[in-house]
Image 1 (tube, one colour):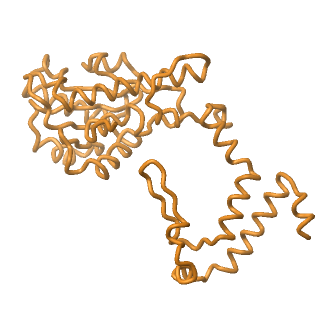
Image 2: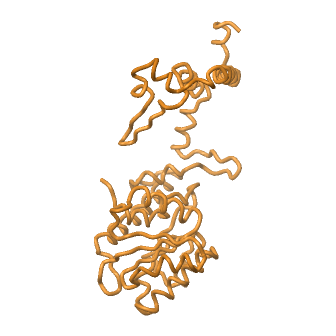
Image 3: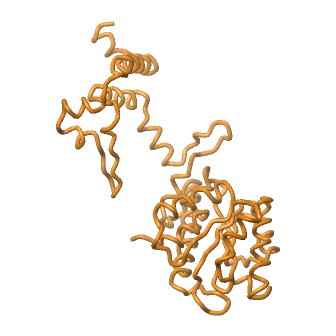
Length: 294
């Protein structure tokens, strides 16, 4: 097909053409040494990299060249990727299976915005939820929210499993290690040996327990939560242990029955797909570990 004919192709036909170009080019260069790309281009490291807001992305050490990059950008443009990205940020429905919007990006916007429509209402609620969690984390770090004895918390234990554990645990290990005040620990395994390993070195009088479960009925999480509550009760007393417990859940009734006050319960919005993201209230333990950045 001649160039003039290729230029006239639109939509799916144009996408298909670019894909076939990329596939042919991939087969042609698949055995190329990446080091040869640096030999041929002294400025490769600078040109095949991007930086934004403190994040640096280096893709120079991949088998990508100028031609591949141009075709990928053209493919994204023809496939209307920028428009689909904008629609995600605007809160349009993208999850066709569940007929849900993909609004997890709202979790990264900490501003409490005014409610003008359905999307604005969701953003407003998410902003409020994040604000509560961030303010509480700051109070724990400063000692304004203290233990039943009035002393600052020296340790925080996050009890959860799956999305209620993995994100906060990963971020805490990656970012906050060595700088935590208080120290943050994660309990996900229902095995008694794991529970004992986490709790044994800690002082119950200076430990805050976060129980993270959407329904507050996940068996592994609630088993470990009951163990932690008994551990607190044995030292600080049943009436005082409420000052040492926090819940991240949408089941206010169950958290209250468990002994966690509503003021220490943090909900996450049902309208957000990916609400177990570390960037929502589920990340409360990480907020405490890392502290709020300006």
